[in-house]
Image 1: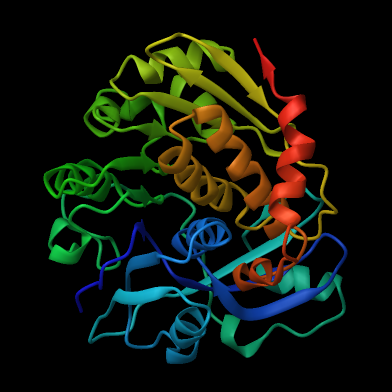
Image 2 (image 1 turned 90 degrees about the vertical axis):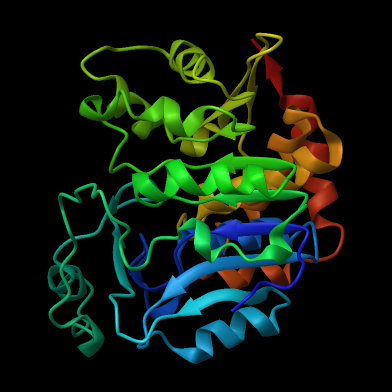
Length: 336
């Protein structure tokens, strides 16, 4: 399929989430995936959102239809002729601690039977990078001509080969702003020589604090030292996501440093919080050309997503809520 024109494009995985929240409630087979949450974080601010993804023949058509019915452009979702794993399991021991192994033990803990859909489910504990594209990873050929000239694109976590080739193609297609959230599969010391090829030319590089620390081990650097090191690889902005503590923002040209707070939301499920931040941030950066203001867009998007379960929940936000939360956060930003 070819993606019809959309102002903002989100590239990455779609999946079916099976999760148990910190308070013991379970949710089975709901729409998830990095690209979905990032797109929803953006959809709170813009009506022109497209998704580029690959799914197997076994991926439920109903979930793709749900995205379309919510106003997202799904023409860029390629359905492959063969089945592929689409399940992802998460259990939260607390609001911040997520476990993704042995689902049977977690359902036993909440006195519920293991869903039949999770029978045989295993998570790959040690993902390996490959010199060929994984079946579900985006490759340059997936980017249809209608993406040319888009206002912005966000590349969600995928394998290294996708991350080193897709942004290059987006540049060729004159996409104005290109942001990227790295994958923990290559954010490790033995991949240190590979990362500059990804970061060079990006507008924004947006790792989590855990990914950044893992990349520099055994060195113990603070967030600003890590940000400067990433920025020196050739991107304009480095945003490090720090969970409930908000984000740090480093600007390469000016050297300015900022701490962006998280909105004090009523937290129910943190799944997709970092991705939805990235979606809001992309909209804010293209609209305002101000990375601090953009980070506030992202913080507000994340605050709404974490108040419920499932990516589409956030789209029921009341009118005026976005601006009200921006007004609360703006005075709390701190320049370092």
